[in-house]
Image (cartoon, rainbow, N blue to C red; front, side, top):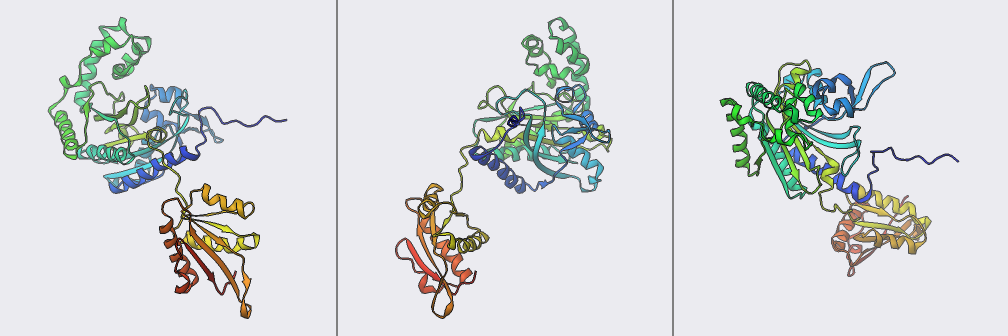
Length: 442
């Protein structure tokens, strides 16, 4: 006997309540991004490997350890996207979108990283992403941060802190880097082997090292404030003033950094203590040098990304919408009639379920199990006087569930408009309506 196929490690099957939370995050993101006039775009799930190697940085863990890279049948090196920004930057350059700048863009979908699976982290996971490309003004940073704050608010996620820092302009960054190198060189013997390696390649990353051997040297390192130019300080002040004006609470984290040289000015993370040690739910920053790194014209940009799974873990139970009506065919002969009625109701925007298994008693139980607001019992067509076919329907509120009376009114309205029921047949007796649709043609 062949072995039963198993799910690949680090992947997931998203269903039931978990899927409803997942879908709620995505639908809320789509609604909120539209409020801010961010255009939806979709980009390929894989790119030429150099797109990520050049943009994310060959020395980063993502590129060196975590990317799913393979040679396709033509011998080209292809990588499943580990994030969105690089692909969006590639699209901006390759499609000549410079003529549309500044652009406010949003997307979502699966991303892939070969890392140790843990709570809320998978090897195939999903992100939502928002970017502003072509705007050098701090107002772009503010709008992105306010968008993220409203998204969290509308998802009902509480206890999240916006941590904010500045990485300064190019002059600031160069001076700070030199100061850090001098500081860490004087303490080389105290550093972990990994941080000694970073000292030559990417000294800023030592600041957020999780190795306890690095913390004394990292905690005593000079902050960027001592190196800020007047322009860099003014940019950061404008961002914080905009957040204050929008009522977005924030806190300064001078150790929040981005290691790659194309990052400028604003760096930020929305952090919660509701997910254990891995507390970041939204993270991003300004990347004014990225598009130039990929061979395009020097173009400012700022953006953020958030893990859908991690956000979904923080939202309240999404709940499964109750049908407005469950149609119950009296027998097999009534099923075609019920299908036609269900189609009319759904076309009018009403949620309708169909009980199509078992005897009449078992079909009736579905209306209760699904918490349907009402039930519509359908009898098969019968030959009336003159040879016409009549169909009997009995509509009743599915008490004690809420919304039954409103559901009856909506269903009656649709049936009356679709099948020209006479008004005298539409007067409900209590919580029940009995009517005949005539003549009936299948």
